[in-house]
Image 1 (cartoon, rainbow, N blue to C red):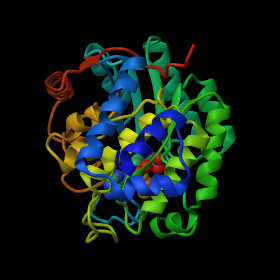
Image 2 (image 1 turned 180 degrees about the vertical axis):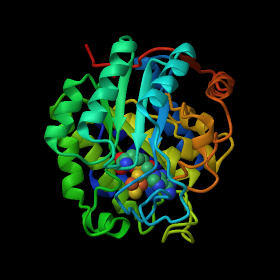
Image 3 (image 1 turned 45 degrees about the vertical axis):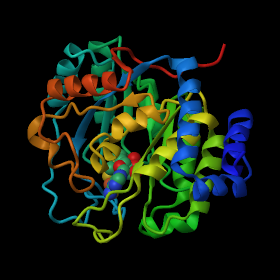
Length: 350
Ligand code: SAM
Ligand code: FES
């Protein structure tokens, strides 16, 4: 039996490996060992979540951002970005459309925009929960104080997505300006978990300067934190950033990591991301076949979609919400899975 197969078996049994063995898989995997891993990952996810794929309606409500992350197309120094904000009414309209289409989770995502004070976010969350009590609200609005997170939680927000981006502080400092630190990012994630949010961390695959060791460190961090969700997708360059000329992340490595994360945290909610669909026409289907169980179609109004351009060539920027969901439904069926209308909460082992 090949060494990599042996290590995949061990990962399935023990859910984590020493860093050196994680690096061995990341550096030595082949298409054959990938198939072996993905089969195991599918079996694990099907035991818990069956063939269901949960959908989350993404509302990209602002592309203003006070941060300057070097990879990001809506960073504050991206002068070409045409900035927009949605009003509370517009956000509620997106949810209304989404609810009619069967969405039971709304993800409010945006840059770190000081215009949306804690009170404004609390008001938006409260109104969505009043209007759609059967729905989960996920926030993805960056680093805040514990007090702010607590206000959002008390207003009824159920989940929070905050990718850690990389678990290595030296690598973190190559991707972010000085004022941002991995330490604070991790503090946020610990606070979110303690406050009872279903919490999601995650990272980009193939971000500039990333090594196989860094990816192994991401996996070790994920194992320790035990988040409910993990968002990973390939890094894709954006023309208006310092990383414009960097190479995009690889499809194969992203799929490999999806499969490994499924074995590390069997119950995790794991999206096949839009970035994955951007680097390959069948990227999201392949993500599902590698162990993912969530997709996040766009519910933002059509006229702002092209403005929330985190990276170049982002897909689904020209469709109506209804077209997006019909297309994704067909895509999931084409690989034997089923897009379902459910809140899709994290399942805790009984
Ligand atoms: N401001 C919030 C935050 O920081 O969590 C949410 C918005 S931020 C744009 C969402 C995620 O997009 C980031 O966590 C990052 O991983 C991803 N992202 C940004 N630029 C990207 C790029 N060029 N390629 C792939 N993903 C990117
Ligand atoms: Fe703020 Fe990307 S730099 S959302």
